[in-house]
Picture 1 (tube, one colour):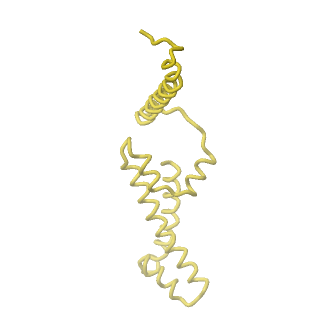
Picture 2: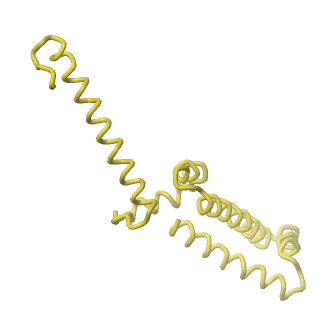
Picture 3: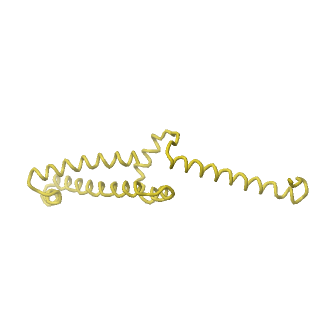
Length: 142
């Protein structure tokens, strides 16, 4: 969330500069982009494409951020997988430093991991011991 929010804020700041430039010329952002794209100059046309891509990028980042922010405790991981921007995820992983979860959500995931791990251990142990009990080599407790 923090890294995605940072990317979103930076993209918004960059886009605002183009909005301000358009406003100073008495144009909307769409008109400003269209002027660039239809200028006939390769330089201005490329700038128009960059601005149009930036508008799309801001929309995509906002959608992902809102989806994650509105996701519930148990479906946030699914929303993350659906909305993930792999370049941001890769950068996050590259700089990842584990921390101690201090939120209700962190505690819930820690407990869920503990219970799943304990359950898998008990299942594996039962599967390993079962053939020996069936053969009478290990007595049943009780």
